[in-house]
Length: 367
Ligand SMILES: Cc1cc2nc3c(=O)[nH]c(=O)nc-3n(C[C@H](O)[C@H](O)[C@H](O)COP(=O)(O)OP(=O)(O)OC[C@H]3O[C@@H](n4cnc5c(N)ncnc54)[C@H](O)[C@@H]3O)c2cc1C
Image 1 (cartoon, rainbow, N blue to C red):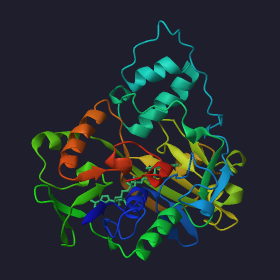
Image 2: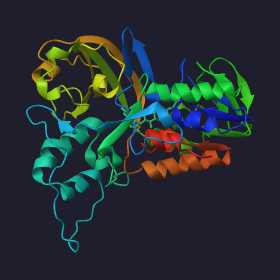
Image 3: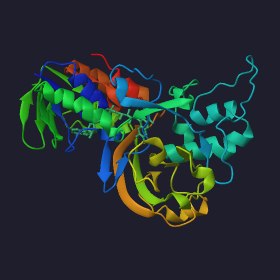
């Protein structure tokens, strides 16, 4: 019996390549981080989720997606600027030795971008001292800053997982929604779920954070799991009449806010991203917060995003948003990965690999 743990893009993509697998998902519906929810007249995604690095014919999705020209990536409050901060020119011979992310930022950016954006924004986004972050995750040519992104023509980003789920249902796979992992017996290859299902696996494909795999781990593996850290995000969605959104923000897709006094690190404008997720005369605004939920209305007014109080429509929560790329992340990942592989459990997706991979990478997984 082949079992897939997790029903978001990675798990669904894997399950669709297997012959009648069992898919276990703890939520009542699939989609995980890339799910969408309908609230009255609105479709709300879990944070900003758009497709980067694909093309109009991207195989797994074909004609379901639409290309959009990215409206410049900016930074909030009086300085809506292009994301092109001047870089330092380092003399190759005297290049400083870089061991952590703070050192990398100091060596890479001139003071303006460094102090006004990169340092305060990164501290807010990751929520830890930047000296604790490694440098193995830095992508110099990140396709997130390319000219275009893609988004489903219908619904929210959750339309992608919905389609993959439909495909899986047609194949008569066994789909256990509303089932968390209660216990894994690594010696006898048995998985028990929170609703009491017990099953043997010959091979298991895991896309969950390791801390969700409740099982009898040896001490060194337990230690490595505890050392892996994750960000925890809240997504607070508001709606407002279009006319009360300040003109500078009217056409934007999202804006970064590095300011310490502002609770959110990013504000998204989902109604500028999707086609049908909002009433025509309204604007959806979503604030992303690392940590506990806070009322964002005052800051939205203070930062000049809106000129009148918007109405809160939904608060969403992700216990795991990103695996924090700490200096020891790779080492700890390897310890857990090795143990799981020895027990026929193989790791994929954002949390299975502890890499903050993108949607197209999950959709491209080949087993
Ligand atoms: C704020 C944010 C913004 C992002 N923006 C972008 C973007 O713009 N573009 C992009 O390409 N990517 C983006 N990503 C990444 C993208 O959302 C993910 O790569 C993709 O959704 C990950 O899919 P996954 O299957 O690997 O992981 P997940 O979505 O984490 O899937 C894991 C699944 O396992 C389930 N699960 C968890 N615990 C258990 C348990 N105990 N038992 C059973 N099931 C369990 C979860 O409910 C979930 O469905 C973003 C991510 C975040 C957090």
